[in-house]
Image (tube, rainbow, N blue to C red; front, side, top):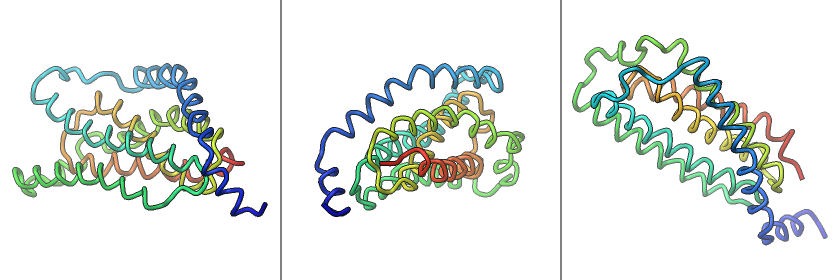
Length: 210
């Protein structure tokens, strides 16, 4: 059997995905505990989170970050299998569309007034760092799960795993983040997501092997 035949045989096998899912579930408790510990050690809940205006901004941020986590997590499972099609990456347009829609609303309502303040806020120097920190347990858990798969494109699997991790980490961080501008979200949450995607792509070939 040559390599192409082996890949096709594995792609037709339904065993890998359930195994990957079980490993993800097994890693969940440790992941949650590590993330909670990091969150309360370095961030904590936003004091005014319960107010309507703040909750409205937080929900908008979560719409982007959770859609990124869900879509990228599904893609990570998809690319854990051999022969996975790259066309599935088009699903990443979903969180991108949510982000662009929110950005359009903000620009329509506020234009470019105070754009510099809205872009940099007061926490741009720490935002991406904290999101990356909160995303590390998620990336470790996802790579642990993917290690049971048979990805023939480990860098792609690792990159979407990094995006999924960033989506979860950013969702947790959003409960602390004092910045509600979509410009800030685009720049600094986006930077952290790119960093985690790069980390995932770099680490996955060492972990996701068959």
